[in-house]
Image (cartoon, rainbow, N blue to C red; front, side):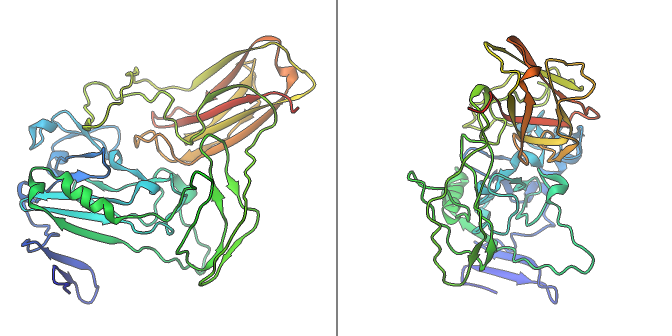
Length: 415
C-alpha cells in the first residue's frame, strides 16, 4: 500500500505490518540491522524528557538490579552512558500526557512517532500511568494493562460472558527534516502538533465540552485540583448519535465533616511534595537538560514504618466525633494502620487492609491508583495539649511495598 510518500507492506494472510518504506529507507521496521547500525538512538516522550538512549546490547552486558527492568550500564557502547541505570518505567506517562512519543534516526534524520488521537478506550482516567517507549528501539501503544494499578484494572470475564470494546485508533506518524541531524528535537516539535486528547478540562468559568463520544450509556466523573475525592454525576448520561446534551450547573461538595484543625500536603493525587528518595549515588539516573529537580539521598533501608503526626489542641470535645481525611496517591501490597495517642494499642483505630498493586515505588512513580479514607473517631481519644496520630505501614517483605501520601487533614466536630 502507498500514499505516494510511504509504502506499507502487510503479511498475508495475517495482515501484520512488516515493512514501512519512507524517505529513502527501505524498511523502517528492519530487525536484522546490527545494533551499531539500527538507525534510531534518540528518544522523546515530552518536551523535557528527550535523550540519546542505550541499546539492547548495553542492557545485556549490564548488571540487573533489584528487578529485571532496571539495569546498571557497566560497559555501554556510548561511554557517556556508563554508570547510568536504564529502566523502561523511567519513560512512563500519564494517559492525559500520552499524546505523542517516539524515536528519531540520525542517518537520514527520520522520526517515528506513536500518536494517540483519542483516549476513550483507555482505563482509569487521565492521570493513570502507562508505558510509552523504551530501549529496543521500542515504541508502544498500550491498550489494556495493569501497570501502576495491579489486578484492580485486570479485565476479568465470567465463563461465556460476551464482551465488546472498540480500541483505538492508533496513528503512526513519520516525518523527516535534514536539519534534525544536528537537532533531533525539530522532528519532535513537528510530531507533537499532531495529537489531541479525549479527556477535557474546564475553562476559567468552569464550562466544558466533550465531543465525538461513541453512543452509549456513561457515568460522568470529575476531579477538582485542591480538593479531595471525586465528583460523580448522579444520573447516567445517555449519548445517542447526533445528540447535544447540556448538563447544566454541576456542584461538587468534597468530603468534609468539620473545621480543619491541621492539614499536610496538597490534594492533587500525587506524592510530589513528599520525600521521594534518590537512588544511591553509584547509580546514575539520566538528568534531562531542563530538569532542575533535586532531592536528598536516603539510607537505602526498609522496614515496617511508623510516621508520627504530633499536634496541639487548645480544646477537645470528648463527646463529639473527629475525622482524619487520609488520601493516598499510591499503594503497593501494603497495609496502613492508624492509632491515636497509643502507638502500642493492640487494635488500630483504623486499617486499610491489604491494598494496592500499582508498583509505583519500583516504577519511579509519584502516583498510582488513588485511595481516600474518611476515618472517624470520638473526641475522648484526644487530650488538651499535645496529641499524636500514628500511621504504621506494617508490610515490609520487600523495598517496593508501601504507600505514597497525597494529603492528610484532621477535622474537628461538625459545626
